[in-house]
Amino acid sequence: MFLFAVVNLYTSNLLTQCYRTGDSVNGHRNYTYMEAVKSILGGKKVKLCGLIQYINLFGVAIGYTIAASVSMMAIKRSNCYHSSHGKDPCHMSSNGYMITFGIAEVIFSQIPDFDQVWWLSIVAAIMSFTYSSVGLSLGVAKVAENKTFKGSLMGISIGTVTQAGTVTSTQKIWRSLQALGAMAFAYSFSIILIEIQDTIKSPPAEHKTMRKATTLSIAVTTVFYLLCGCMGYAAFGDNAPGNLLTGFGFYNPYWLLDIANLAIVIHLVGAYQVFSQPLFAFVEKWSVRKWPKSNFVTAEYDIPIPCFGVYQLNFFRLVWRTIFVLLTTLIAMLMPFFNDVVGILGAFGFWPLTVYFPIDMYISQKKIGRWTSRWIGLQLLSVSCLIISLLAAVGSMAGVVLDLKTYKPFKTSY
Image 1 (cartoon, rainbow, N blue to C red):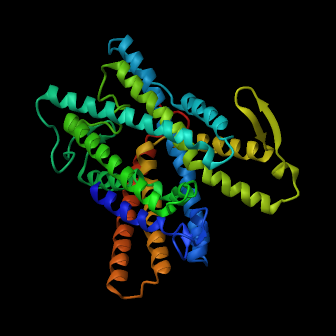
Image 2: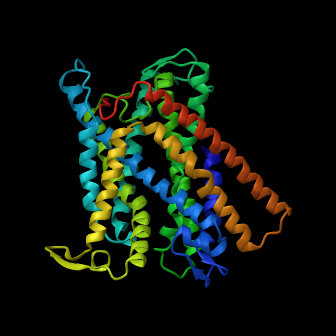
Image 3: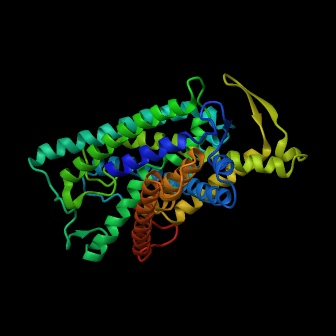
């Protein structure tokens, strides 16, 4: 986790310097990640970058839909478990909760531009601190109750019986590799870093402000990741659930779990928008260029909304964004394997978007010569991260294959 943080901190700082082409203070602005690649690298790499970035953003929306439904169910199940005094297993389907989350996202997706979701981002950050603090506190309390640290330095023991069956040596390898993908996903903000940087005012230079922001955010999130992960494992050892707040490692106090899971849902409502807005903008700008004379695509109609002012309605935006949310919700209902999906997304996006393109653009921007010590060091870092991504992808795909053996479309229950 610490190594992922260090790599992400280094490469994200390289990426911040690619917001402007040439001079980092007065050079040409690149408003999106794809524009930065086009301006600095050009060629086929532009389309490759766009394809990987936007598929990843689409996948993130699916992952967040799954995670939000799991937390919504956890609230219902925790109250059910409490009222039945632990006698009812409280199994239920996730489909209704995914649909509910999808309806909420259809509404929030009508926010026109990326810079207008700043308030959602602030709310999401507050919610993130809330549920992380609750999870950490419950983990510490459980360790104190146990009066010992469970687990071992080598992780889950071979032969341990879990919900997925008995853990074999092969499964342990897949689980370990899948964990690499999950950690890569935890640091996946580079895919929208340029888009975020474009909302920053200057002076001071955008890359300086963004560097401070990334350093602070990575430091804070890494501390929380390590504390929550370590204390959760210390509390439950080999029986640690995949999700500390929804896997029912904890049952009481149920009201505190409800607050934490509600915070997760609110956080994901905002995070869904932050990650989807760049994809919305790309499709809408492309459509305007493709059909500049179409009123359906370009025309905006003023709709007065009491207490909020005037909303500019665009029918293409309404239809396209609604279809996007429907698709992500439908796929989430078809493949509700959160940990596996997260691992695949992390593996798929980590190397190209967090490591390869930032390093390649930085080398081109700073005109670093081939076979110099700096060039060799950067290439070694890139190759090492590529190997990690490939291993994580293999582990995550193995996890999906294992889940599919007991999977029934639209009938997954928890």
